Image 1 (cartoon, one colour):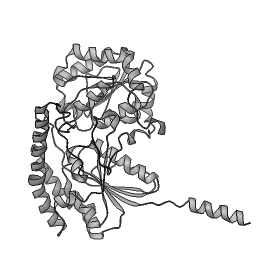
Image 2 (image 1 turned 90 degrees about the horizontal axis):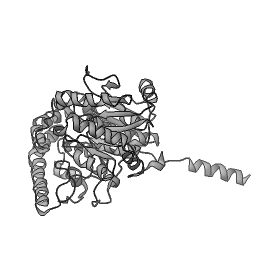
Image 3 (image 1 turned 60 degrees about the vertical axis):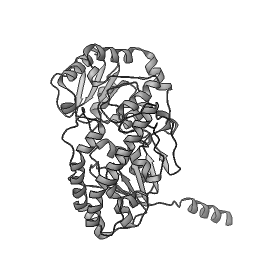
Image 4 (image 1 turned 90 degrees about the vertical axis):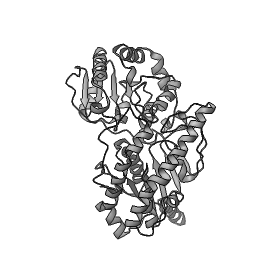
Length: 428
């Protein structure tokens, strides 16, 4: 009798789980950044936490304990000037950033949050030149957690005093030279970015924070009140660098839970008996704007030559010249496609999320980098032995055909991809 009651009481205790009520705020014009962050919050919801997400993108996900609301009105850059340096593009975007600042605070969901002041246990913020959002968790009186869709760059290091090293990878200039002058360039770049953030952007952000949340601390104070930073990078594909205890790498977390492919894509890949190729330049680079017609025609001609190998090609526009073995789609579930056993090659821009997915699924990569850290990310998998890189200006019919032929026919690349850097595959 007593044993029965003891067993029942023990079972009751073991069923108790500490859960939290978490708010996510993702104000970004990069859909891929939203997707990885949303995957993080969805994972928390499946573990029993109560999660609310306010984001500039809306997924309409049906998960218990997970609610999402669309933050409308974010202004997205019309074009991406690939001829300019990344820092020049950032400076060009300053007026746009300031407009988005006001749109954010005027958003109905944000105004409701301020008026009702609901109780949460933590707020997770996706940040990139939008530190004004940090005023909200302070207003709600809860800890601030930063989620970064990139790695441990200067923009994230500041929150937890992680050191900015002159030899570390930068989202602006990639991996700088380790020479003395290379380190000087990196140091000067950090100084320039500090001036940009702390003096130019912060002045506008402080002004609007006082307008919508009177008495709010300054941006400088808010950035020093962050409890935890989660970065979407992994030591398997990142150069060595130090991390303070409250900056944690979680790269690859979103790759582990594959979703069922749409039936048409599933059938297309299943029928690719000779293999399939995925072409995707991410959510920011646009085929119409950023890929010159000459290069697009070369790529299409080259992909046509590898038939009967089939190709999935992500493009926001229709491509009349697409060969019969190329299926063009405006949006493709990239991670789930890379998991298909018939996928033989990934032609990518080299974004961190895309590179991480290729590493996780063991797929060779042909990288065509455009800006920021993409070249460095591709170089990391070249070093691992399962990738090649083509600069946009280097693409000719000969170089493109040669690159995809080498990656598809030389079994060394596929073997290295399967046996190269690994992380968390045992958790599948």
